[in-house]
Each structure stands twice: as C-alpha cells, then as structure tokens.
Length: 147
Image 1 (cartoon, rainbow, N blue to C red):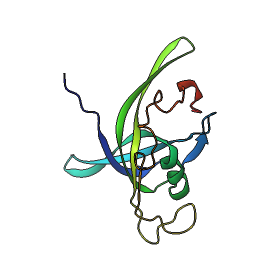
Image 2: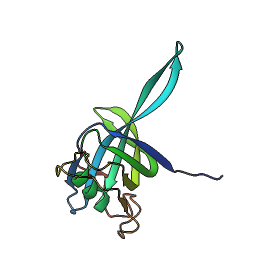
Image 3: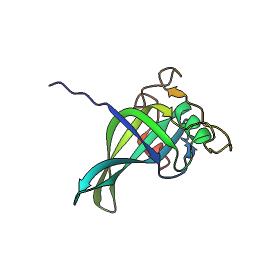
C-alpha cells in the first residue's frame, strides 16, 4: 500500500516560541499555528480558523525562537505525527506536524523578537545535517520531550 505523509501550512503563530532543550541538549520548540479558510456563510465570506500544533527540532527551533513571535506569518513543511499517551488512566492522543522546513514570511518593517526585520529565509533540517525529526533517529526518547 502506498502512502505519502507531507504537509505544507501557511498561517500565523498563535503564541510566542518557547525554546527548550532535551536532557541531551537538543533544541526543541512547540508552536501553535492558525490557518484560515475562507467560506461563504449566509451569503457572506467569513474566515474559519484551524489551529495546528507544530514541533520544531534542532537549528530550526533555534531560528524560530530568534525570529518569530506571536502573530508572525510563517510557512511550515513537514509530516503528520500522532502522539499517544496515557494520563490518569485515560488514553489520549494528539495530531501534530513535525516541521522539517521553515520559511519566514515577514516583510521589511515587521516586528520580531529583535525589534527588526524578520528576513525571508529557510531553515532546512537536512541542510543542517540534523536527522529527519523522528525520535528514534535523533536519539531523543519520547519521555525526554519537555512538553
């Protein structure tokens, strides 16, 4: 059976980037992304937001923390990952996007954490010789993720 797991999303961050590190020192960040869809309701166009959690690893997480803040326009390319765990006897799950590429979409004059311009730039994990963001491949155990 063939399968293809690829996601490209363009939207705005719903909160500031919180950069953390695993016990092994690997940078990791989870961000929220709002993606709007425009639909016609009762003869009027309205925006319907969809909220997506995105995980960033390595240098990509560091770049996001340096240049992005709440409201920043951004594009993520990556893959879907279903995380499952048990808490208080209840099985839980959450679908997330594991970002492998980040494109900053800010324009000149846009505010960022440094008070300046968020340049158009791409952070590709493959180019930074970081593993493909799967927990077993980069040596990070699931229980080491700080969120």
